[in-house]
Image (cartoon, rainbow, N blue to C red; front, side, top):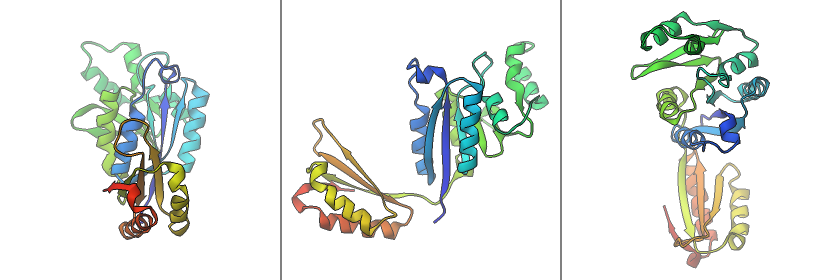
Length: 243
């Protein structure tokens, strides 16, 4: 089964200080799962060049591709482009194509702050989409996206097809038993199906179940066999429903 891995690097003091609640990581995790991509790392880093560069360098060497979120605007704390360049040992250069696009979408002559957004790392390419006027900058396996959700989300969706891999299949079991009562059965299931992705999520509100179990695999037959095994192991009166 084909597996592709990804890391998400979220850049911004506003996230780390709680001034802004990040939703991009949640959105990306859902969309990558739909695309069959394993999001294996989410890192939140401050607006510091060396920290951004270190994290991007680490992720780019270990995952098939990296998405960054935030830090691509015209202000002093927008350092992601330079951080990515530093991660690869590249200099920043003015993209004439980006400068022309910015000029076209400016009310008048763009000021120096706005033209800062036309600077890209040497060797970077631009990914265009017909319904998004500002292209996504890509350097090697790193894609640099804005942090504003209204911009991040359509840009990520635009890129989704190039990341797509074999899909994940999932089954779910809802139980009336607490985790401590079924832990041994979960361990047994994983011992027999070590490649299974098995999740256990307790609820402490007025839901009609106490624990939701999720079973995932890219192999549909493997998943079904693991599901059947676990269903046979669980006490019949503990299973409320499955899907």
